[in-house]
Image (tube, rainbow, N blue to C red):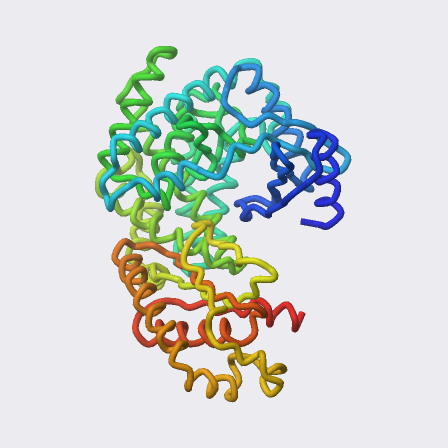
Length: 474
């Protein structure tokens, strides 16, 4: 976030709360270009938001006012500076539905308390779609008022150009466009007069006191009921088991029928059609952010999407003649290059405690932090002060230190157990941090040696970074 925007947000916090800022922390980047910081005073906290896109801000702020009037669970907007594109919103804490899912599930088993939270979520979705859509000013919607043919064509083109083309998947362009039109005709046969949240997935649902609250709805517009349910139940990394999906679909339909007449068979067919387009839209995003922008953690979502496509083609083929699209989707599931993306990435950082522990950009918020400060420090001696743990004199120094060997043996044992478990469960990210006083000798040496150890032992991708040294070079 720009320093001037951050300073303005801090001043805005003090004006709103009447308290001095005691701490700030940057939140991980979202799928959009909005930026967030958590700002805390002595007894109050808020999230500071900066978004250069004025129209998107107008949609978010206008929707928020309306949803709060309707009694829906969204964060309050405390204060705003429209000209600066910044505002303060209610801090709902740090636990998303995805976080809770990762913490609570046991392999493929969904405990009752997790299913209950998902049931609450789909019931609240009905309220958003029906109550939230009543009286809503759809003129605020950006970039379209409805998830109409134009919106659908954008999503399908996004999939075609940013995923299929960049992944080098062959297809007949005219035949694929014909199939896209057939699919869109079918999707548009669904009722369209509801609020469509657009990105209703587990990372946009916060848990506060055991109840779901909802964020990042600024992309909402008018559309069909099925789309948001498809987004939640086929949320790639959430990887819900099929029996859980089927149960939640029935929970949703039971709640919906209290307020709206539903033909369950027709709804179900249209639901799976929306699952297909939602997955394709998501894959377009993975391709753009991953293949084009080179953000690796987006690529890690691709295997989940391929797994979902495989199951859909087997169990829920569409009642449509779309041979080219079906062929393309089948070829994706059999593509060896895409399957190789399924490896575990271990991020290894060395850092200085003076600057703080590195942030986990994968969004998983965890891993190991090892404190190297109890180990004999070569930085105390003049001969080593201008070199690092990558240089041979420092390496020779540590090779003679038994406590470094004991320390690393313990590290190897603990990290290896996690790596093996993560690989077996299909997890995609693990972070390991080594900290010392200056981030120059002990932490650098430890990080280098763990990277070498893991490369030799496991088929994993290693991302090694020496934070303090990169700062000094920069």
